[in-house]
Image (cartoon, rainbow, N blue to C red; front, side, top):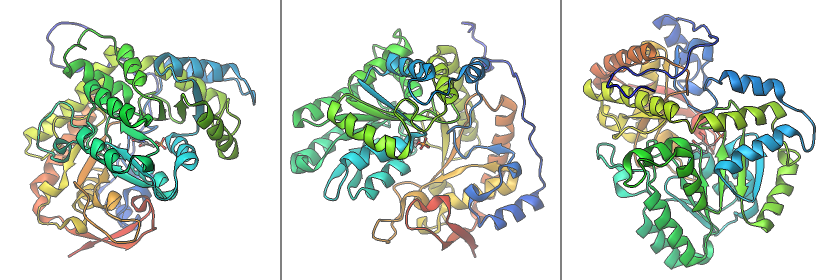
Length: 460
Ligand SMILES: Cc1ncc(COP(=O)(O)O)c(C=O)c1O
């Protein structure tokens, strides 16, 4: 990439194949949303123009990844594709055992089936929804310990994803025997895609060592996190991203991973760990639900795509473009007066729906209302990360989440700058009439992970 001071963001790739997008009318979108029960997960993606529901599995693969797919070897056991995958994973994350899984939540399910049970507590900077659900399903309690700055969307801090080390120390001092492990999510997705510093990881490690507790990373966005460390943490400006990743891994005893994020694959994940006994237990569970441990729910071709993606996602040209293009969107929204979580995270821009729709009580879901309006306005699909996602307690009661955010997650290598310019116009138009947006009421919902299938209706 050039060192010259050009302002234009250059996508560091050429477009190799294209997927047409379908334009819809406002009337079609209004009807589609009503038919979906005002739940954006229920929309047909053909009815969506710019799909920012998630950055998970939605990225574009490279020519080399497609070539890897052709090379995929589908032997049941010991396929060369598995060993290429294993080599790529352990080059960055040198854990003793690596168990492939069909996606991240399968790794969580295996881990917490092995170690979770009623009476136990699992702390994290902020648990992602599937992590929390898997912990709670085992009977254990999931506890979020973000630093206070991480809960205030407008506060600027270079590492808002950090875990509150003093709070962790207090928790462990009081009930260390009930904590099977400590987790840190990098970057902190539910907390706004904010990074965790190496200093914070080191401090968490030190507390874990004092209490004899293993530390696991939920490492979905490790490369974006490493880029922020390189950019923002003293001493890392000249360290290669891959070396920063290895240093992060070196502070942990294991990891859960979704390969649908930073590894640039459309499917996959893994559980990696050093503990031999726990690994043996997890392998038995893996065989029950995922498959033999050298494929674990994946085809050989998926393992190849992940192996190649792991080499591409630590490229500095790619990460510079990735982080800069997310910031481009965030800066434009901020300039348009839209309240956004600052500084901008790695994979998404988060709109502070509670601030933007101050007239809507959190229990009337301002984030859901805003997400629906963005779709009706311009065919943009976003995701509520707030009271719909986190407000339902295991006992059936409801409390407002810490924040009501709407996430505009940017799929990797998929949309161009003109798509982002269109999106900025859509959000700015909705912002102008934010005061008139209605609250929402839940018409039906399941007891767990309700945001995926709940049905809503506008109130008033
Ligand atoms: C931080 C985090 N952890 C875990 C997961 C679960 O991964 P998967 O969707 O592959 O099951 C996600 C997915 O969005 C995530 O963002």
